[in-house]
Length: 185
Image 1: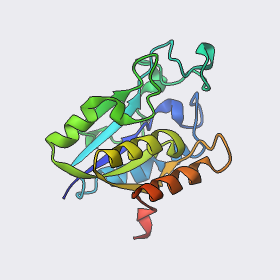
Image 2 (image 1 turned 135 degrees about the vertical axis):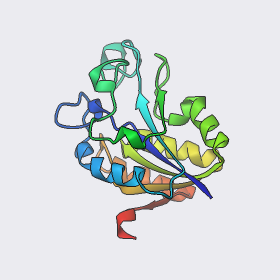
Image 3 (image 1 turned 90 degrees about the vertical axis):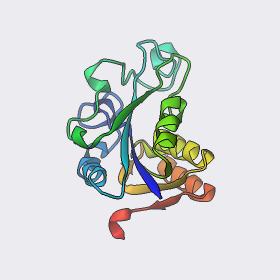
């Protein structure tokens, strides 16, 4: 079985202390992400990024629910500096059009294409945030027919509504994903 690690949106704007839309504890997963990226079981490691235009529809200033974040070519849109870039085989950008949410990395057809070209049949999804981009990326990976694992030791939730992260993980379990803290064996 060919496996991929998908590191979702581990970007400066999503991490404390200074991120525009910081996920609580988001920065704390850096060591685990690097550990997973170095794991020989993964044949390919792909990182995703929100890469929004300045007038993205999800921004409050344009009628959306979120503060301005991950505007393309800004410091906040860059991958977090604690992420070992030497372990990343590809970076896939999403949310590049004003009218797309960018919650799922599969929004960019390049992701599915790369996975197919590499014969990937299983993905482990980690990163930020459990209840938005991790959820939607894992959901779409299941729709693509991939075996999906979400390693909860390497994800964190926004929890805009109390319990959103846990509800997202429950939904993924119900759809057939393996949801577990892989540090526990």
